[in-house]
Each structure stands twice: as structure tokens, then as C-alpha cells.
Image 1 (cartoon, rainbow, N blue to C red):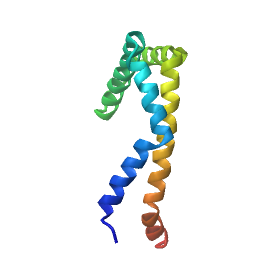
Image 2: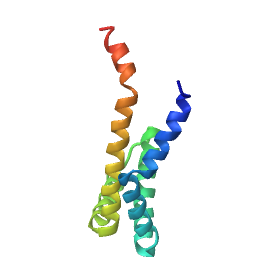
Image 3: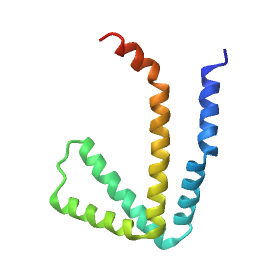
Image 4: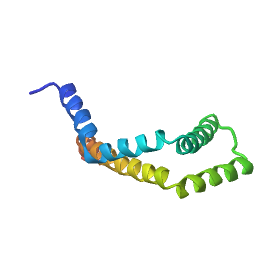
Length: 115
């Protein structure tokens, strides 16, 4: 039997070579190569990270911060290249979630059999 880590590295390579990942990379490069798109995307990501950090630290998010976040999301959703990037990101997330379900199936079957 081959080393399980070799299989994991092969899976990593397969993900990188997948159509979903290649489309994501192309959409990401398009956004990053346009100064306006990059600035908008960076602002969006920073807003996301700030809110996530506050949530993880148990800090209450104010109505003003929620409104600002909504405005940032609306703005990037209207931007064609960023919107496409977000769509491609979602496709890769679906792929990774599907793979996760497959590789955790033995655990689910093992623990599911205990019930």
C-alpha cells in the first residue's frame, strides 16, 4: 500500500490541476492585475477578516460595522471581475467540501455504526 501522505500530495496536485482551481486562479489574476479591482477586493477581504476576528474574540459587532460590511459586499458583487472571482471561489469550495466528505466517510461509517 502506498504512503497515505503520497496520496494526499497527489490529491493536492489534482486540485491544483482541476478546472475549478484553474478558473479560480485565472479570475484571481484578473482581479489582482487591475489596480481598482485589487483595491476593492483587498478592502472586502480586510472587512471580512476584521469582523471574523472580532467574532472569534467575542467582541460585539456594531450596527455601523454591519452596515459598512453590507455596503462593501454590495459594491464587490456589482463589480464584474470580483463577482466572477467570488463565483469561482465558491466552485472550489464545493469541490473541497465534496472531497472532505469522501475522505471523512470512514470515520462517519465507524462512528455511525456505534449508534
